[in-house]
Length: 180
Ligand code: HEM
Ligand code: HEM
Image (cartoon, rainbow, N blue to C red):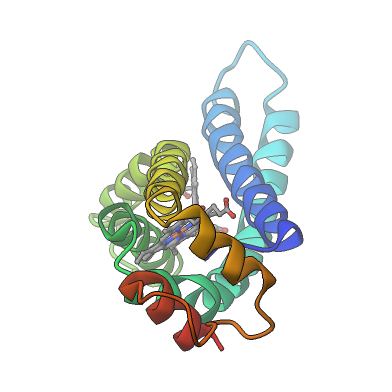
């Protein structure tokens, strides 16, 4: 479940870029119709930010795809952090489907709604990520703390993932055997 450092950093990095480009675009979009400023400059900035956002979104899809077998399946089987996990999947699913709508829904009446939903859920992303990581870490720490220190030491020293003489710990054995 614990992600490799490089993957975790990539995930945090791309989510930050996605959020920053989206939030700054909202500002640039307001400024480009403000007659008191250099509207052309803000128009260019808005276009640049949106292309950065679209590019970041493509990389995000790649990373989210990799997260399925690496993280979600194992955490799901271990019954850890399911509530905020499902909330995360629902949030990103909604962002992806509204992004599709922004590109392909031709209706002028629907577009502002799709845009508002996309922006509202987009702005909520930092809170969704923070809640997921905090609750997830706490739930994993609780499990580890309830395993006897001798069993933890035996496991740490064991050559195989699940030592034959280790006392049965349903959650950990499930996670480890599915992961191998
Ligand atoms: C697309 C959705 C998801 C994303 C982007 C995501 C991302 C993350 C990230 C970045 C962490 C912090 C990892 C670390 O500190 O090494 C984390 C932790 C965790 N996530 Fe997810 N996750 C997602 C879905 C899920 C689901 C569906 C579940 C549960 C079924 C889940 C369970 C956990 C658990 C248990 C932890 C704590 C792991 C630990 O500290 O060892 N995640 N997640
Ligand atoms: C998985 C996450 C996300 C995906 C796949 C995604 C994708 C997209 C795509 C493809 C567009 C259309 C770009 C264009 O018209 O050229 C878009 C627009 C936009 N996104 Fe995201 N985005 C995501 C997350 C976010 C987040 C976190 C924010 C944060 C504020 C955000 C804010 C915006 C804004 C403001 C727009 C412009 C809306 C409009 O044209 O009316 N997005 N997004």
